[in-house]
Length: 103
Image (cartoon, rainbow, N blue to C red; front, side, top):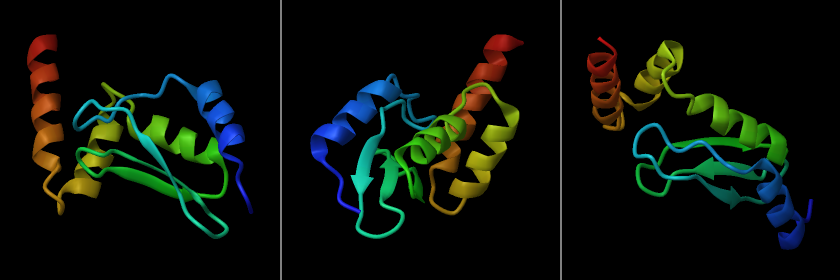
């Protein structure tokens, strides 16, 4: 499937604004691959990514759901995904700080 850059740019604008990465607070970047599932969103700073997905909508939805702030379940999923990559401690520190503010 060939993707026109102008068409993709219009789609990205339609989905904006994007949630920031839970780990480092930066916005995601779209990575296109060849094949049936070309869409992957990733964070340049920490390497967190979602995908690959077969449609832009699926990739955007996955990014937004994976980076939902102040959600205990999402924090647990983050911990499971990143415990082996070293990003876990960054996310856990942010969660602990949020819990201290709330208390």
